[in-house]
Amino acid sequence: MPVPDASAPARPSPVAGRWKMLLVLLVCVAPIVASYFTYYVIRPEGRRNFGELIDPQRPLPAISARTLEGQVVPLPSLKGQWLLMTVSGGGCDSSCEKNLYFQRQLREALGKEMDRVDRVWLITDDAAVNPALLPALKGATVLRVPADALAQWLQPQPGATLPRHLYLVDPLGNWMMRFPPDMDAATAAKAKRDLDRLLRAAAGWDKEGR
Image 1 (cartoon, rainbow, N blue to C red):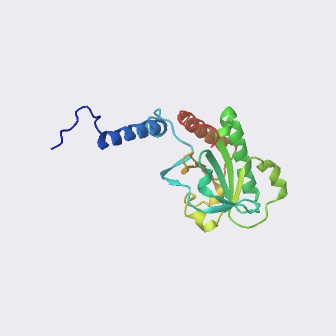
Image 2 (cartoon, rainbow, N blue to C red):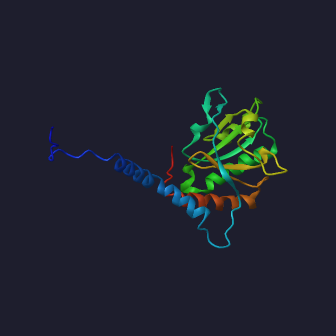
Image 3 (tube, rainbow, N blue to C red):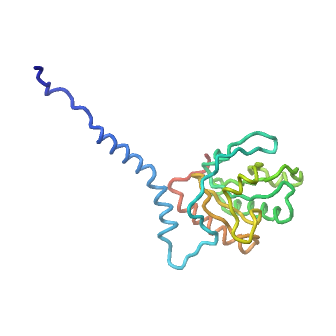
């Protein structure tokens, strides 16, 4: 009977290998978990969010959108940035124009952190976009999406409609906040405070650019 060679290297334990992989995974996700724990749990007494936190968070749906030029864009491909979203028909009435204005102002008010946030306008029909709006949309992502599919993901607060809100999606692709309807200058300042807090909480793992 052959005698085992005591000098031969021992085979690595599969259990040890799995533990090492788990430790590496924990190291990778720890900053993300910590930032969300800080924002949602360890909050100073008396602090309140202006925006409504979505619980549970809802990931970007696997639907195809189209650019104004007709190019197909999978909605989940927008992951990797904070997304400040507004929704309306292509005709864009005065309420829609106001949301686009505050969407742009909120991003610019973030100063050096603005490149971590993308503006997204989701259009729910095939109506033509007023050419006069295009200069203000420079740098924004404008996509046409099926209205029925969008309604299964985003939801307004009771008594409101989708176009009356601004929505926030985190870099992991989760819809996680809805701002109250009909934003004005006073409420925009409160929304900016929410954005500042979230960006600070996520600074350890979220960087600008996808």
